[in-house]
Length: 120
Image 1: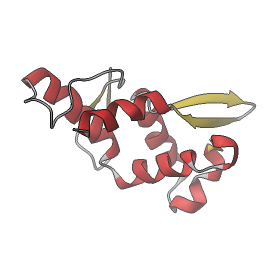
Image 2: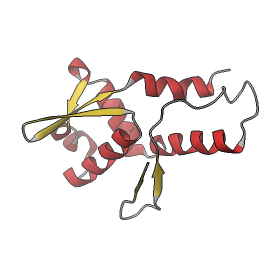
Image 3: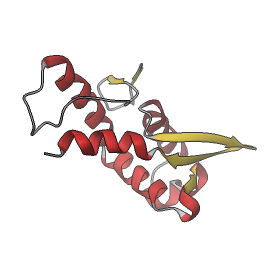
């Protein structure tokens, strides 16, 4: 678990998304499960992170170099790196260092946890 704070954001408790709970529509969530699920969705509630996840998922070969995310997002390299780090810490992306650049891939199993939590 890491606490991440950007300049304009409140501190965010980023936890790795592993497994959560029964589907929200199947049974009422207890407080712990609701907190865990909310923290996971908070990671994706940022438009930049959601776009990054989409860029990585739709990149040729299923992977994206961080250097290729700056222009489409119209954000600075440090901002893109911050948001990529949050997605990695949440377990939604993996990072592989190649030379001076980092390459990212989606972790489908982690996205499935969030999808399954919303299914009925």
